[in-house]
Amino acid sequence: MKFLLEKGGDIKVLLIFKDTERLEEENDLFAYVKEKELFKGNVSEIYSSISHTGDNIILLGLGDKEKLSFNTIRKSFFKLGKELMKYKVESIGLTVPKFDGLCYKRTNAALAEGLLQSEYSFEKFLSEKKNKPTLKEVYLEVLADKKEKVEAGINEITSLIEGVFLARDLVNEPAINMYPETLAKAARDNLEDLSVNIQVFGKEKIKELGMEAFLAVSQGSNKEPQFIVMSYNGDSDSKDKIALVGKGLTYDSGGYCLKPADSMVTMHSDMAGSASVIGALKAIASLKLKKNVVGIIAACENMISGGAYKTGDIISSMSGKSIEVANTDAEGRLTLADALYYAKTVEKADRIVDIATLTGACVVALGNINTGAITNNEELMKDVKEAADLAGEYVWELPNNEEYRELNKSHFADIKNTGGRGAGAITAGLFLSEFVDDTPWVHLDIAGTSYLANELGYLPKGATGVPVKTLYYLVKES
Ligand code: BES
Ligand code: MN
Ligand code: ZN
Figure (cartoon, rainbow, N blue to C red):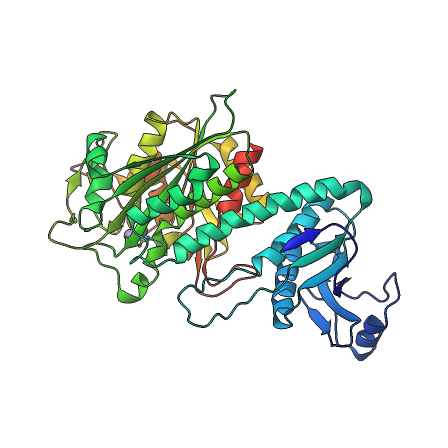
């Protein structure tokens, strides 16, 4: 799909707010649908008048003028993209007005995003493809003095969405293909050409580093664990470095605390955190952000075998803290404990953000709409929230009172890996906080937001790529 900032296109798209009585430039079709009450202008509402005789017009509703947001624009243009596919449309044109209160550059980026988002589908295993993108040219008539800015904004969102799609593809790939070594290969294949340096440690090196907690989780699987470190140094003048640490469970059966069959079906998606780090790094490196970022993934499978770890085990960790395994299904925090400690002590990151499909409790609390967040540093949390805002992704901060820490206390070890039924998303987050000490840190629990049972707005069924966009804007803007 190409965006051209000039007049043109086979099919004209008219943007219409709810309850609009008259268009500035008079239009027969609009007058007709208005009189017949065929079109109201609700968000994402579409009326298509397309025929072989030409003079083709599509009316696209944007809802209440006062409520217009970038997310309504994304959603409406996503719907438009799907509609265009039905008619195999190859080119469209529209005038982009300046909406009250909305930045013009971001307005254009949001509508471009909606159209780009409409083309995603994961169909590599289908003999017959269902989704066939046809749109080649989008002509945008934009304000003359904003052309350059709009162009930059559209280039940026195009690369960013490529990062989102990469994350989705990695997550949607079933675990029979996507295991620690292939995840490491995906990091190499997608990032090395963008001058991201990739190091991959196998079992021996992981052992040498003392990552006993990570190793314990991995030991029930035939697949070798991989510790993946991806370094992007976009700013050689600065020592500042942010670490993005992604949970990388390429499959989570629950281990001996085996999950019920239905809950296991989508557990190939338990590496969505790591996929979001790879996707964000792709965008960061493609767009050459002047920042230093390190992506870290402790990749393994949580499986059952004679060699698997068991409940009641007391294991060590890179930090030296001992951990009681109260539940083998609370494996993510064990792998992250070592990955976070590595980020702090070896990489010496100034700020750390971890992204993890960590708890079912977070899904119970926030559903699929908000990512749950916990921090030891409100300033970094503020930056994350602002980045999420730019991205149109939702992040909700959970409380972190000291009193919750009690729940993670163990009798025979320094800490245990579950805090009981109550406040499960919070105790999981506070468990992680023990391994970053006072380094500014935010934990993002994406168990609900990274993978959907049904499509939601412009997000598809399956992997969503959340929160690639938030991570990108966080790195760029803070
Ligand atoms: N990967 C799961 C969390 C999860 C649940 C992700 C649903 C996506 C959808 C995680 O490893 C897990 O099993 N957590 C347990 C923790 C419990 C044993 C303390 C959970 O949430 O049940
Ligand atoms: Mn688990
Ligand atoms: Zn898990």
